[in-house]
Length: 197
View 1 (cartoon, rainbow, N blue to C red):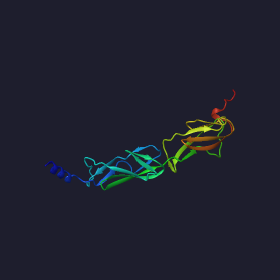
View 2 (view 1 turned 135 degrees about the vertical axis):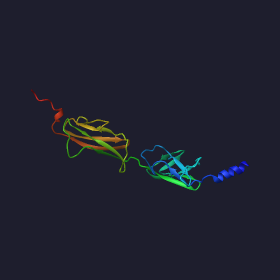
View 3 (view 1 turned 180 degrees about the horizontal axis):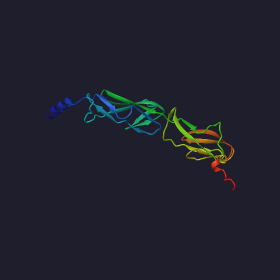
View 4 (view 1 turned 90 degrees about the vertical axis):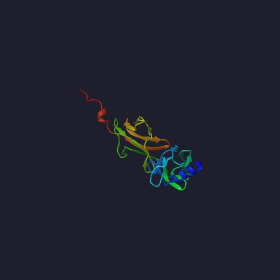
């Protein structure tokens, strides 16, 4: 009797028809840190979530870009991989893009002009993965000659100290970029000594 009841319940149970992922169809990462496999829900033919949810099997290809590590996807190298979930013959996949930072650009200074002694110029460093901006990256700054051009290590603000040229270097991780600044001209008005009375 129990076997017959279990058989009838199984026969009446809805069959998996599709797999729905939460979030975007493309996941882009900019580090080699492992990330959780996207949450997925198995639906019936009417688009309703099955209860209980059947177990999914996961795979990642190619393994030169990412690999499956338990419930996480671990980046291996730059490129695109396909993360696939499967239950029975039902499959669904999303794209997993590993875009590692490979470029650091400096802006905020025109090489054709000079910074007056006592004046400042605010440099900015932008980290990119090819042409895409990688947010949240820390940029550190240094000067080849702080007696000529002093730079704030955290903000990139350059202060002209004496006439001459200095190389400002931006560093983020293994990436570096440089900008040659020229300091020249009169002392900035705001820093000039007050006129004699």
